[in-house]
Each structure stands twice: as C-alpha cells, then as structure tokens.
Picture 1 (spheres, rainbow, N blue to C red):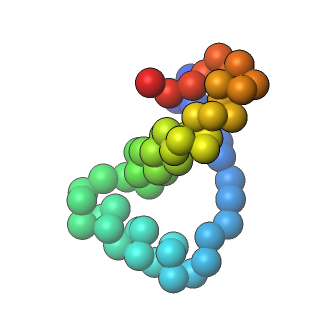
Picture 2 (cartoon, helix red, strand yellow):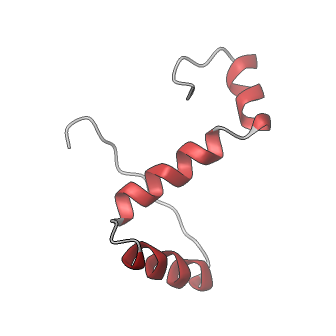
Length: 61
C-alpha cells in the first residue's frame, strides 16, 4: 500500500448505497472500484484536455 494515497470525498446517500451494492455483487472491493471510477473520470475528453493543456505528467493512457 506504500504506493497508494488515501482519497476522501462525499457522495449522496443514494449513490453510496448503490455503489456499495454493486461492489459486493461484483465480488470486488471499494478501493479497486474507486480507482476504476477515478481513472474513467480522468479519461473524459474535457479532463484529458486539461491534462494536456497544463502538461501534467500523470495522465492516463
């Protein structure tokens, strides 16, 4: 876990319940699911444009 950082945020109760239910049904864990969600969010064109514009080194391929 040394190469991982904690990420905190708040979501509406409805999203929290649905997210946790799907994670259990997929036999996954919250950390992996959150990592996947953040990676997908970073891949959005508008976020990729910001990453490129600001020459951020940690962009996702």
